[in-house]
Length: 165
Length: 268
Image 1 (tube, rainbow over the protein chains, first blue to last red):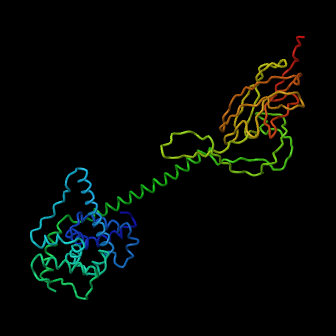
Image 2 (cartoon, rainbow over the protein chains, first blue to last red):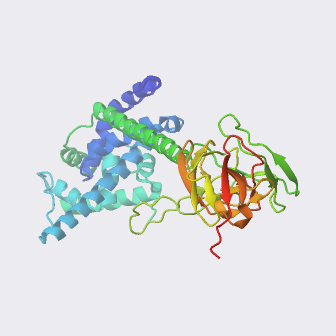
Image 3 (tube, rainbow over the protein chains, first blue to last red):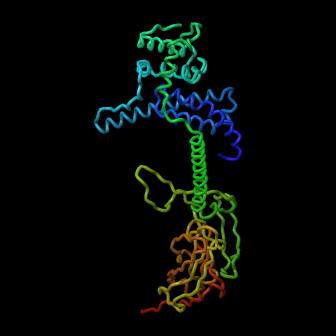
């Protein structure tokens, strides 16, 4: 990867092995396509810009935010491609089949708005504190709590269970 | 939209546990690969190197093109002193071309400085894509003088003439300057014949041509003697300044050919 950057690559490789899989899983569970590619792109940017990123208090937070943005961009890009293909082919838009969901909660999660689902994925799947979820989503802590409350309310209603707090 | 009631978000209640399980099921997919990250970094660096190389190449090509367009080096025109003076000087390159002394009067309205003289004139033509514009900057060629041009008078077709008869003076002109030189401009290249002590006027103007560095052209100009030329005329080639005339040679010499001009025979 280049002579002087081997040390940085080693540091980032450790960060990658510790966080990449969880982050990709959270983004995939939040419904983003190509979540792994988005995470890989975020780490590529981290390596390329490590001179700046490495000075941040928490470079991993920067990587999470970049990964979330990349995942969002990829989803928007796919939506545009589908719409364009549908227009060109004069055919109804085809939606990629969602992964098999074998329970009601899975269906209920898939139906959540994007922000609520992402907040749930980062909070419950990646086990991030609310503050880090807020940072990754580039929203306030209060907004994260709002999305989590709303998501829990929707999931509880779908399952017919009390939203215990 | 902000909600921050201070309460902790439940993380281990039944709903949270169920949500975790469901999210885990949805998280299936390919795992990110560090090798892919390394490959991505290499790809970006290759692109950066390629872009940097292209920029450097473009700069070098643009510089080379500008140097070529300027004829190998920046062009300048040296003009004479603003003070009107009259002097007599011999040509410098006497070894190859010896010209008679030339009376030179420098103009009053030109400064004694070397000036950049870019002109947008008849540049090389090229096909231009629609919608685009090009400007070709061409520098004015140097004016003719003994420093820029080496001229020879090699022959006169008929050296025994009668008034009214026409002959041709032939020779060559070579650009000995490092940049293009015109044969005619504010100063002029004149070939002609005259009696000693007279001036050769514009009878022998050469056609205007721009000679590239090292280029040699042949010339042939007409000489038709009048009654004032009766006698032994001396033909030569030289360079004028300001006035379109050069001094006629006073006698034989290099680049000087004598011509006998006889009076026209009367038929009366």
